[in-house]
Image 1 (cartoon, rainbow, N blue to C red):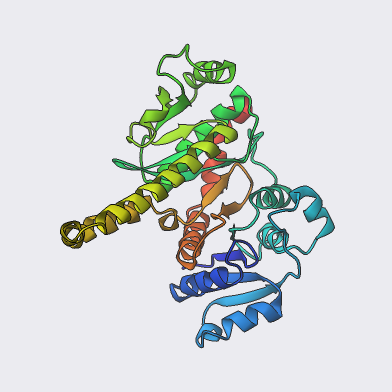
Image 2: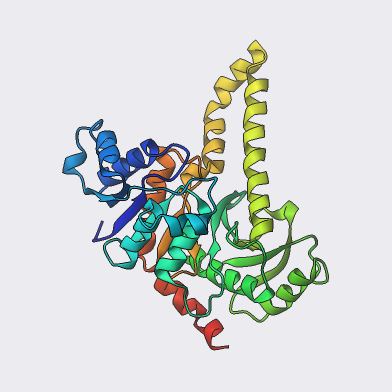
Length: 335
């Protein structure tokens, strides 16, 4: 896969270093060059459990420290200049890698990427763009947690970046952009939403107006814009609902013999449903607006999710997503 190299924070995530190492191995077997970042001795011990690793496009970069989920990210990065997520970001900034992936502390990943790459012209706040399933395919939600407090101009920037990213990631020529609100009318919502709605009407995007929460998964919008506080809550509610439905279905399908027979007949459809709503299929959320490719994975990422995240990071680097976003933002930067 060309000369793209993905730096992987091997200490990031609930199942590190096992899941990041295995995910990197799977990605390397697909021909993607990977640099695992973490303590060399620990990573070598994990890799030696898999006999073929030395023949794969896989390297190790020493990083003795990690940022724990309980730590304040800014102070942790200051105290640990050789933290794995910071080393991964610096590899990209120095040109030794093309993209980075981490399933570790989200705040630390955002700060490390921001410090290493800077931001694109016209961007005040980078945003996390999460892919969510819909009835018609998929949509992008941003911001999904990078910015708790936003101003109207930030939501406009999110919309422009989201539309540009949707053209690459979802291959939608003219993405429809909706503003998440409590009603479809332009007068609905708080001051932030009402002013953002007004500004979005003149933005260089296909703005379809406000989007109610009940339309979140309908596919009416290809890009859903909101502040990071709202977006993170919406994302977590969606994830918990999927888990609850999965659990309740398993209970009901296993309750009686007749329903067990029905479960056998519907297993295929049930499997397809799980695949559509499984975050592991998407791998990670790109941090849009920084001057480099950075993907943030779910803390519970499995090896499969990390493999998919690495593959997505490589594809975004190959397709020049940062340059495309910079071009899309040029009118914003000159206003």
